[in-house]
Image 1 (spheres, one colour):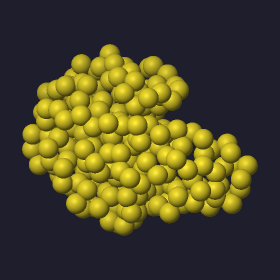
Image 2: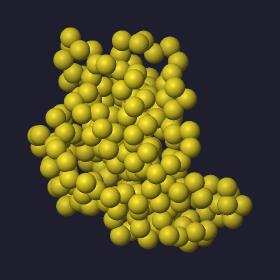
Image 3: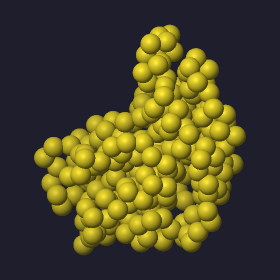
Image 4: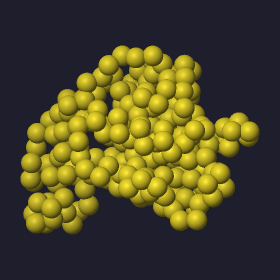
Length: 239
């Protein structure tokens, strides 16, 4: 596979694929760790840019690589920034995906939120403390300035991509969208999801789990089940 695209070993090629996009500072490979729970249902593929670029260029390249890999239906899954990227990739791919699963993400038309713009302008301890509010930074990093110097610039660049994002109205996606979120997520309120309905032909299915912005870290089963349902809904003859 392309350097951008990685998956678990020994996954049969006939399984429909779910292309996964990570949050700011995250690793899409972490989602591939759910592969065993989805054996026989879908093959999880981590989409990991080789280098950080603007969000439009990143989405263009990701869409091109995915289109070259698959001709049949597939799923797109992303969390937070990754959900926004997955949405824009879906737009570029037209009717080729079969389902979009957006996790921990307000409707695209609300991006960039004032909070995202604010965080993108922070540095050092200020950025670390902002990320810690919603669970985006491990305690040992918050307490170690040297670790912050190593880790935070990449996270700040990712937030910068969101801050630079400009929503453009477009045609509704011709397939279903599922929304997965944590009940205690300080970044996503119920009202922030309503405008997702303008982005697809049907009303999005919405799922809530216990937890905050990274609700799946303590218990990934609920979001794994959302992926399972979407993959199993593919017509048998297309799998």
